[in-house]
Length: 140
Image 1 (cartoon, one colour):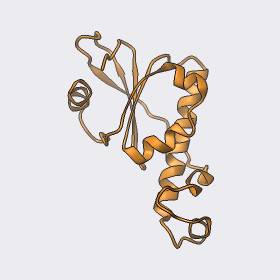
Image 2 (cartoon, one colour):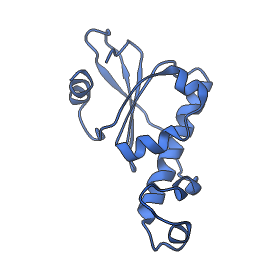
Image 3 (cartoon, helix red, strand yellow):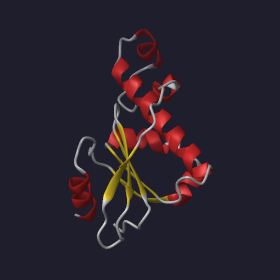
């Protein structure tokens, strides 16, 4: 995967959100950590359509996985923030790295303009990893 200079990398899972920018040349990417915003997960309706068969009743009553609803709401908040940054022209190239479940939820919330600046998606859990390790996985 080409990692152009200035590309923003959103590293996401159901609980964490990390941001990096490629401060190196495309041939030798160097990810520099950026401050990720402290987001409030408020879109709990995002988790109502679970692929794992959880019903709306289970989601409302807590009989199912409340954690899954919390994760979906977190991912929706992250995607909402990324959409805002793209629309404000703060991000013009983006790579999203997220575990498969989070990535699927994120795709449901992508704005059209975010899709236009998306350089790539990587369905892996890389939160908490070093920037060098992230680059190795992306180039591998």
